[in-house]
Image 1 (tube, helix red, strand yellow):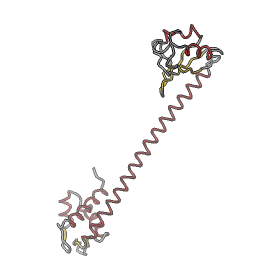
Image 2 (image 1 turned 90 degrees about the vertical axis):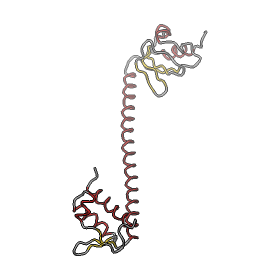
Image 3 (image 1 turned 45 degrees about the vertical axis):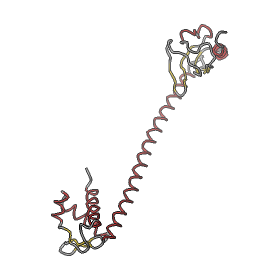
Image 4 (image 1 turned 120 degrees about the vertical axis):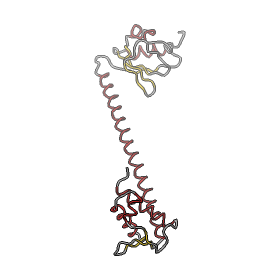
Length: 208
């Protein structure tokens, strides 16, 4: 539903357009407030404001007896052009407000995500004496396509898989049925030589 401000402006713009269209000629008197109020289904006060707006732009004149007379078609054109420009600026302003709101939402979500990642990294670092390390799985690795249970990483290296970083996502505490894919970054914890052992094991190509 339009606000009172938007309504009387819309009526003023409609009357100006009717003047341009020739419905009201120069020097012709426009119907009184009551008739216009009935025509537009608004209060006489709303009509008064609409007429006052047109009077301020020298589109019409209002006599002491409150008769409304058309005085300028050219000013009616200018009045409509002015409000078209104002509406365009207002529309652009609204678009900017929407984009800024969306940006604030995205920034908040990104900040929360980064906080979660930092908190998780801190938790991994605090798993003393186990230090988390990441090992990338090459395409030729013999573990590609196998589950964590099948590769028996802990039995071969003493390392425990706590996460898998895959592209921009991270799988926390993957189960034994999680399948290793090429270029996965496997996050493991273990004793001081876990990195060397895991690199050797993961880097071993198929059929070796």
